[in-house]
Length: 425
Image (tube, rainbow, N blue to C red):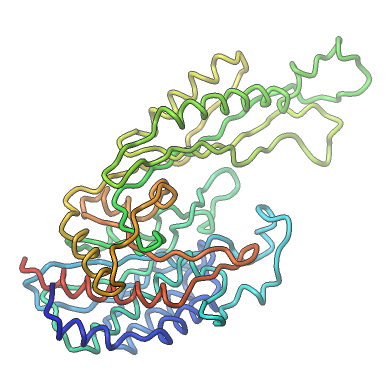
């Protein structure tokens, strides 16, 4: 590790107040998926004010990636620390699609009290972005020189939102949109740390995603004036046909979830199948047999299992129902177990021990059995681990996180970056 005097210089520049206040400021700026420009511009200005070179990556008129670079001397290893700016909920009336009730918008703004930061995105994951921003500022102010570049990447579009049907704007382009743009538009490095939530555990294997729409078909005409024998509902009603499909999906899911557990170096990754939405018929015309019913299924897939195999398995299971259906896979993202990541695993582990005085907590399946931008880096051959903060929900959409957790994270990022970026390359 870097010598103890340099460690002390760096850590001395990091304060709990800075971590809390910056997290609050980020929570004060609404940043739903597709509308990350305002928060991105704030971050870019913050970089510039603290001597960090800002790079604005324009994705579309409503969204940017906010990249900050601390230049090394050119003869060392480069590192990116990545975090997303978009939030789990939009903070608007659209959230009623998910929530039976909504708290007032005023309660979604940033707030500091009782040793915590509250607000929409406080834990997922504006506190993580704040932590690596504070870490970069501390490195710059400490005067500790780096041989390789440190890149701070606040990205758009990581939240699980996928374009389908009428939902086609940038507001539905998540799941790695910003990080793919980042890495294919000139921002590259030798290693990366994804600061998404991990509860201070170190994670380097994560699931992939397949999302599938299934349609069933009925005979759209008036349902009144005839007996069930004359017009059997199960032959005419697309919703009733979908009931058979749902039972088949659920039966396949139970088998898939048991059969496809992935035993990784950090423990088991748990696959998951979720029936997430259903649409059928016309609410304003319920006197007609519905002619089309659509089911939307999310499948979290283990590393090495290709989405096309999921599609093939599910299609075979549904064919046995005898119901006519159509299937379309509209999202397909591979999962990965990182290769060549061992050197930075050890650095992050030692950095955490020097800050917290204990080993980092072991990964748990909940933190590993999801998809994050970690997979995009590993897909592109950049060895990447996830080390992030935790936090929990506070209300319906608002979140909370302990300031101490942000403070520890900022110190770990700073010390790990100082070590990795001073390796000879």
